[in-house]
Length: 369
Image 1: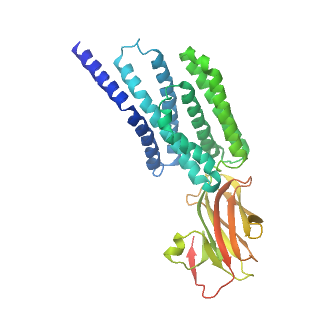
Image 2: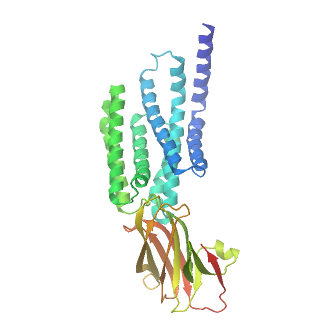
Image 3: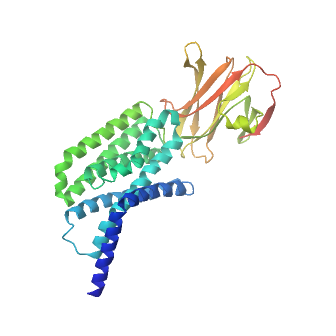
């Protein structure tokens, strides 16, 4: 009897504490999930990261079910484990949501260039940052399931390219189909456990449809980065040659200030070529092509004009990235940009530089890559 009273008092104190500090605990758990991602994903293998994300996904799904079941059975259960779980489940859900959303943010941030992919990255960042607003609505199953579906869709687009070693369009559409199938089965399970959910099926379908259409639109516009490719290194040089398993590059000597300021200037004559080097990370056995889209900024029309699209194939699996280069002669003085893209136009990164035909006192240094 005394033990039961102590448990009841402890539960009451914990429930009161979480209620009084809900405004701070919920965002803290969300941020905690984000920080765990940024720490662990830099120190563990990719397969381990995917396993952790899978566990987070299962925990998040279970938390949503428990929160909604507990909301309908709040007065019927006296089991102390059930009561503790009822108090802590919303915090666990926010932690896993934070970890899963930030995982997508980390992968997509490093896969594409921010100047192109910022709308999609902004969507993920806003979902994370808007938790203070979602805090008032996180008990609503429609909101929970919508966020959960977005997470399923995002994670599917992360994992499937690694599984199939392909970044083709069919992989993205397969991810869409898989996430739709998973959320359908999940909603059916939730409805079986809690029949009242059937009343909000139309709202759930609308939310899922909006998310699917938005993701497909972003993909069609090449705004979603080309996961799992990522640009590890890029630069413009006077000359590049193969040397054994690496490359030797001839670069202009620069000081610290030159390296910090964006927009390198390359001093070459009209007949001299400029070389652009890139190192691309790709998973093992991925076979695709990388395109260097050379563009010149025409001051008369004030637009970037594509002058050439040069490509090379890559076969993934190298930890430091698969290296390749392209070069062009007869470059006009002015601003140049090389957009590093996939064959369907998804942008991994951009190298901006200026060309000057004043070659006096240019000092060249030799480096290895």
